[in-house]
Amino acid sequence: MSIPDVSGRSIPELVSLAGRRAVVTGGAQGLGGAIAHRFAEAGAAVLLGDLKADKARALAGELRARHGVTAIAAEMDVTHEASVAATARRAVDELGGIDIWVNNAGIFPSVPLLRMDVEVWDQVMAVNLRGVFLGAREAARHMIAAGRGGVIVNIVSTAGFKGVAPGLAAYVASKHGARGATRQLALELAPHNIRVLGVAPTYTVTEGNLEAAAAAPRSATFSGDIAAMTGSVLGRVGVPDDIARVVLFCATDMAAFMTGSTLLADVGEIS
Image 1: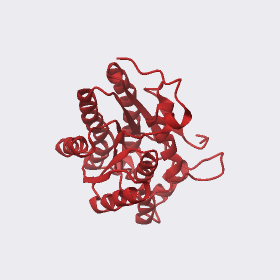
Image 2: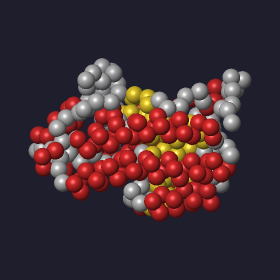
Image 3: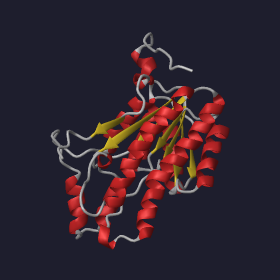
Image 4: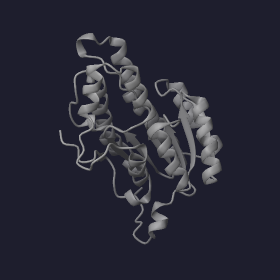
C-alpha cells in the first residue's frame, strides 16, 4: 500500500478532517484539550481519553455544542494495557473507527537524580513511554484491520533533543525514548499507510504546568527547570493552541508526505 498523491486537492480539502475519527490521550485539558478543539473545528469526531473523566466529559460537551461534531469521553489510564485497549475499542464502536491517534498524556515530576526513587522513574516511563507504545499499538491494530491507514502523533518535547536541567532525568530520558519510538514506529507501520510523527513543544502554559508550579512555588530546582525551557526568540511563552496547530498539520493531508519526523515547536529556543 502506498500513500495517496493529494496534489489535486484544494487547501480546504487538505486541511479538512471531515469523516475522520480521532483519539486524544490526556485530552481533558491543556495541550490535549487544545488539540481536540482544533480537530473538532476541522470536522473530526473526537474521543477524549483522560484520568480526569469529568473534565473530559465537560470538554466533549463543549466540542459538540461549538463544532457540531461527535465527541465523547472515556476514563483512561495510558499506563494500563486493558484501559488503552478498551478506549480504542470504544472509539471503534462509537465513532466508527480510528483514523488519528494522539499520544499526548504525560507527566514531568522534578526530582534530583540522587533523591529520585525507583517508583518515580518507573511512573514517568510508564506514562510518557509505555503510554506511547500502548496507544500506538492499539491504534495501529485497528487502523490495519480497517484497511484505511491513519496517523499517529506522539507529543514529545524539546527535552527529547537535549538535556534540560537537574531534576528532569526521567522526563528527558522518556522523551528521548518517545522520539526514537516515533522513528521506529514510522518504519514498521509505513507498509500499512500509517504515518507516525512527533511534535516537540517547548514549555507551554497549561493547567498541568501551572499546577506543578503552584505545588512547588519555592523550589529552586523547579524554577530552574522552567527557566531552562522558556528561552524564546519570538518574544513570548507558548500557549496550548500554538502546539495544537502543529498537531493539526501533522494529522491532515497537508503532511501526507511526512512520517518519522519530530517537528520542533520551540519558538526558536536556544540551548
